[in-house]
Image (cartoon, rainbow, N blue to C red; front, side, top):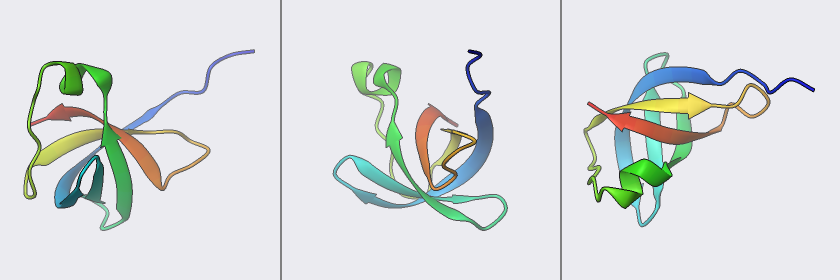
Amino acid sequence: MAKEQKIEVEGKVIDVTHDIYKVELDNKMIITARVSGKIRMNLIRILAGDRVIVELSPTDLTHGIIKYRK
C-alpha cells in the first residue's frame, strides 16, 4: 500500500500555547499544528508572527506539522 502524499503550505503563526500552534494559512484557513522533531531537537523557537511551512495530511486538513520556520 502506497503512502499518502503530504501537502506543504505556508502560513503565519497567530497563537502559541505550550506545544500547540494556531497557524493561519495563505488561503485564510486556520489550523492547529505542532512542531516536528528536528525543530524541537535543535531548540528552534517559534513565536507569534513567524512565517512557517506546514505539512498537512490529505485525510485531515485541520491539523499539521510545522516543518520549517522562515
